[in-house]
Amino acid sequence: MKALIWHNAKDLRLENIEEPQALEGKVKVKVEWCGICGSDLHEYTAGPIFIPIETHPLSGDKAPIVMGHEFSGQVVEVGKGVTTVQVGDRVTVEPIYACGECEACKQGKYNLCDKLGFFGLAGGGGGFSEYTAVPAEMLHKLPETVSFEQGALVEPSAVALHAVRKSKLKVGDKAAVFGTGPIGLLVIEALKASGASEIYAVELSETRRQKAAELGAIVIDPKQYDAVGEIQKRTNGGVDVAYEVTGVPPVLKQAIHTTKMNGETMVVSIFEKEAPIHPHDIVMKERTLTGIIGYRDVFPTVISLMAQGYFPADKLVTKQITLDEVIEEGFKGLLRERDQVKILVKAE
Image (cartoon, rainbow, N blue to C red; front, side, top):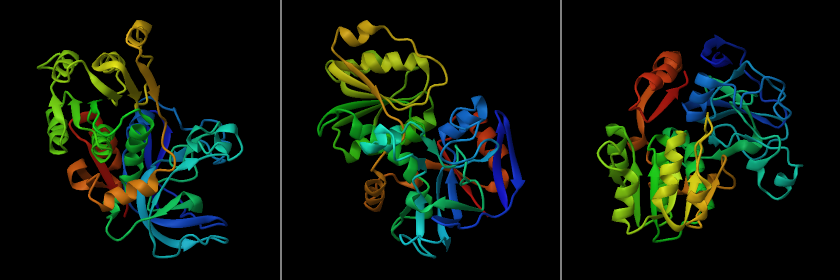
């Protein structure tokens, strides 16, 4: 079968490998759609970040590995001991490897596991393939009202909803989202579902600003306005919570300055470089700065919200391609076409 293999930064290869088997505790899934994540792109341009060069302690794998962790599919084979799903089930994958033994895991904070890894980044298989064998505990069933395309968006939507849940946002609060790529747009959706009264979206790309506006955000073009000053003016002093979703170092400082006294900045991005800030930006207004990694205990809620119409694929997906096109039209395409939002890859 065909699969996308990460060998090194700027070295992805579409190769033929053996189909996986549903060994004990695992489930073989025919992949339907897999999304290209910002983390995947970081691995392509500047990796390895999450991809293990030495054997990962939980996956037992190391580079080169099959990529793809945002995916949906259909169960075609069930391994020994698996009782939670059966052949024919429509599923999405919560791709976190956690040890279950460290202090974070004992507290139920499995996304903070000392040995954290992601299926499709830390090895074990991945969604950029025709079939993959997934540990049964990673699977969540999709209702018939949630399409496979939506199913491929559950994972990034979980990041967004976890970010909003972990922030101090309350119903009626005002928020700002810096960066409206895929995760930023999903944060807007999560903020709507969480009762934010005003959502400001700061974005350079006209196409992405339009997407943010379609989702109900008040868009700010930083080429036209001083984003910080404009938001402070419109909100009479700043938003309750700002979400940094660009990974661009200077933007972090802007996000902090956008928050009011006692406001919070939530870092959602993965940064490739350090982001210098002045401690006075925090201290003098008693602001807080926090961040999240991944998600926990949120997939069922995301799937339920999708069934209600949140996180709509038709407004978020800007391109659909085949596995044969994943390198040129997918990864390289995202670097060429900065206006793209979410690209889904169809396994064949």
